[in-house]
Structure formats: C-alpha cells, structure tokens
Amino acid sequence: MSISKRLLGLAFASADLLLEIDPAGKIVFALGCSPTAGAAADALVGNSLFDRVGKVSAAVIRTVLSDLAPGTRSTAIEVLFLSDKGKVRRATSRLFVMPDLAPNVSISVTWEGPPYPLHDPEARPALTPAAFLDRARSVLTTPGASKDLAVAFVDVLGLEAAKGLGEAGERLRWRVEAALQAASIDGASAGKLGPERFTLLRNRSTEMDLEGEMRELGLSEGLDLGIRSSEVLLDPAADPLHTLRALRFALEGCLKTGALEEPERTFTAALARTLKEASAFRTMVRQRSFELNYQPIVNLKSGDVHHFEALSRFSGTRGPAETIHMAEELALIDAFDVAVAEKALARLRRPGAASLTFAVNVSGASLADDRYVEAVLRMTAGNPEDRQRLIVEVTESAALADVEAASRRLGALRAAGIRVCIDDFGAGSACYDYLRGLSVDTVKIDGQFVDGLDSDPKARTLITHLVELCASLQVDTIAERIETRAVADLLRDLKVDFGQGWLFGKPESEPRLESQPIKPARRVGAVVGWS
Ligand code: C2E
Ligand code: MG
Ligand code: MG
Image 1 (tube, rainbow, N blue to C red):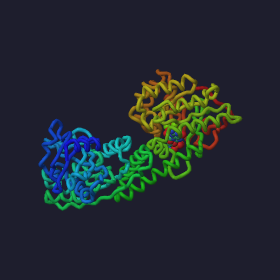
Image 2: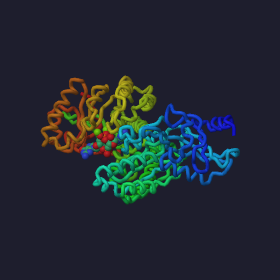
Image 3: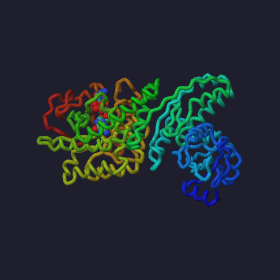
Image 4: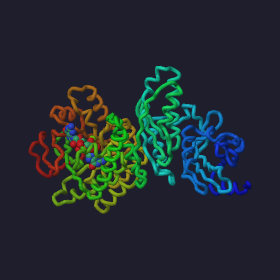
C-alpha cells in the first residue's frame, strides 16, 4: 500500500500518529508524531507495540484486537505510551483494519498532552480525594469528553502490611498507585480514600483487568495482595456539573462519617440520595414550599425588638443548617436565597407589618455573581421603604471567593438603602478580612463566643476588642445565641448593641414584637432605630 494512502489514513483519523502492527504486534509502520517529543516516529518500527505501552493498555489493546473485523474501527480507547527517560504519554487511540493491509492492524493515536514522568512523585498528580475531584471536574466539564464514566473503588489489601518490607514495600505501594493513576480516565483522576482504598474515575467503555494487574504487581514483589473492586456508573445524560457536585458531596459525606465499608453500596446510596435531594430541593425552591420563621433581635440596653431574623424551615429530615450546607455544596443556594428574600418581602408587605424589619440570610456563595443583588434590587425597585426594612445577613458558611467583588455587590445594596450584616463573625478564618474588605452596617458575633460567656474570660476579652474595633468603624454589633439573663447583662456591659437568642424568643412562624424577659410586656408595634 502506498504511503499516500496511509497519509490519507492519518488525515482521516485526524490523529497525531499512525501505527501499523502485524498479527504478532510488531510495529511495521509509523507515521507522525512519536510519544517522545522531537523523536522520529519511524524509530518505533521493529518494536513490539506491547513493549511500548503500559501493561493495562497492552491488555486493553489485546482485547480490542481479538474482535476487530476487517473494515471496522474500534471505539476510542485510552492508551498509555511509554516515552523516553521513564516518561509516559497518554493518548486516545482507535484500531482499524484497512482492507488492503489485512491482517495488519492500523492504530490512530491522538496525544492527550505532553509526556510526563511517571516515576517522579512530584510530577505525578497527588492521590488525594481533593485531587480526584479536581480531575473529575475537568473530565466532566470538558466539552466533547466521554461522559460514559464510572467511579471505581479498589481495595488493595496487604498494602499496609507491605510497609514492613522496607524499600520493596515502598516500591510496591508506589507501583500500585502509579498503575491506578494510569488506569484512570486521564491518567490523573485516581484518589486515595484510605491506606488501602482508592477511587478512580474511568471510562466505562475501556475494558481493563485492574484486579489482575494489581495482583501481578503484588506477586512481582513476592506478595499475595487481596484485591476487591467495584464500580458505580454515572448517568451520562445528567448535567455534568450536577453530577460533579453530587459526587463531591456524596464522597465527602462518606469520608466524614467513615461510612465507606462497602463503598459501592454506601457511595452509590449516598450519590443516589444526593441526586434525589438536589432534585427535591430544586422543586421546593421553584414551588416556594418552605417556611420562614422569625426570631427577634433586641436592643440590649432598652430591650426593644429591633428587627427579626427570617430563618428557613424545611420539611424532611435535615435541619436548616444541614440543608443550607447541602444547597451550597450542590450550587443550588443562589436561587434559594432569592426565594427567601422574595418570601420575606411578601411578609413585610402584608397589612399590619409596616413596623417590621427583617434580616434575611444570604450565603456567601450567592454573592459570587450579580444575580442575587440584582434580584433583590429588582424586587424592591420603586419601594424605598421596603429597602429600609430589609437587612441582608451574609453567612460565612460558604467562604467568599472574591471579597472585592462581593464588597462591590453589597455596596450596591447599601447604596439602595438595604443594610448589610456579616453573620457568624469569628466562626470562619477570614472574618477580619471580611470586616476590612466589606462595607457593612453590622457584625453578628458568632454564638460560640456567647455560649458560656459568663465563665469564659477569654471570650470576654475577644468581644471587648471586637466591640471597640466595630465602634471605631461605626459598625453595630449583635450577639447571637443568648440563652441566659447573665450573658445578656454581660454583653450589654461589654457594649454589644443588640442580642438574639432563646432568652428573647425562639424562631416562630409569626414575628412577635413583644420580647420576653428584659421588657416582658412590650407594646406591640414598638420598633426602634439602630442606635
Ligand atoms: P444563623 O444565621 O447564624 O442563624 C442563627 C441560628 O441560631 C438559627 O439556627 C437559630 O435558630 C439558632 N438560635 C437562635 N437563638 C439561639 C439560642 O439561643 N440558642 C441556640 N442554641 N441556637 C439559637 P437555624 O435556624 O437552625 O439556622 C442555622 C443556619 O442556617 C443559620 O445560622 C444560617 O446560616 C442558615 N440559614 C437559615 N435560614 C437560611 C436562609 O434562608 N438562607 C441562608 N442562606 N441560610 C440560612
Ligand atoms: Mg443569620
Ligand atoms: Mg449566625
């Protein structure tokens, strides 16, 4: 067959390299770009293809070859080619038989990135769950990438015991990790979940004998490893971002509770539950089928109710904090936060509510773009009084990725007359950055500094300094989770402006203007200003 026809084959396959092997697997023709950057492709001629690829790849190629008929083309398979100096290069390949060349087989090779050193632990992608999820993100969100994916769990029993073998044990661990990594979809999406447990994202259509390879690796170091593996298939029709979020949420949940004893069952269950809950949450937001409860915030000096915090209540088993956390993790929170603001505004507009002011919570995640702020401004456009009766509490549960942009967005709310509060101050690590970077009216001191304040001198000192700092910035302070009179008195003496907690009233389905203990019989309708 002429070279021009083969060139045509290369162009047809729109590949980087075209190989031709004889029935024994010997490379008899090579055209294009070699696995070793800068080297001539024909240097491959005369080698066995199986010596030029990784073990798993060799096994996959053998399987594909065994049922490849003339005139047909295989599906895309992933092949790890060996490059020079211990490097490897990942490729997508297809095998096909050109009638003129039968029984030889042609192989198109498209490189997926440059060669990388497999034996350099620094260069090898880390095997952490975070790295796994990171890679999963890029795989799932790359347009055109295969969505026919599975999450595999592999237990390599005996790996811990192999530590006792010294260098051989270390080598074995290293080789096992490298092989798992190489078997993962882009050579970098394996993660280590425990000393002997791994997970990897793999292409469902790629056949491989991972268990066999792991066992072989063990035997090569004189060890009989016990291998257990299982797979969870991902829905190729699902929105990849939803899948990814659910994957992360389910995996993190399993890792946190240590419930990965039978990973295929626990993880599958967690993933299915997460996907179901996400869908139910979306429906709930769409139908606005959640409730707001209202908890009073009082002026600590006078005992007057200043405003109410609107707290969401959901049907189902998860509590509000857990539901909100899930919604943040699954990127469902921004639509929800808008729905909360809408519900609170509707309540504020009901007859007889003119004296009420509500604080609504907004997750930091909802300030990552303009949508939330734009929606709130739109909802209150033409109603300056509504804006004055609305406070937005930025919860720290989801960290603000870009404080400057968030500050700009909050600034737009404040410019429109809507007050802004930083919630849970002190609970996160970035609180002082937020205080410096965000323009706010109020800081709400996290309940952990308030609990048992009367017996905690350190918390007292902290609050004293925070109050001073806020005073100098002309920012008001609220203390949350006040349960006893002693703590309320102490906070008032420390010059904290406002208080919230069961002492003054629990969250209730209707805002109750009379707060309990400080002024037991408040006049209904009495609401005071900020100072
Ligand atoms: P948060 O904004 O810090 O709300 C205060 C939490 O403390 C509420 O929990 C409230 O019920 C509870 N609490 C109030 N007083 C006391 C007290 O004296 N003692 C104790 N032990 N707890 C008290 P809840 O309602 O479970 O809400 C938990 C978190 O969920 C909220 O914390 C907030 O971060 C989030 N959340 C609630 N509703 C929404 C919402 O509509 N949107 C967003 N983004 N987050 C919300
Ligand atoms: Mg709050
Ligand atoms: Mg709070």
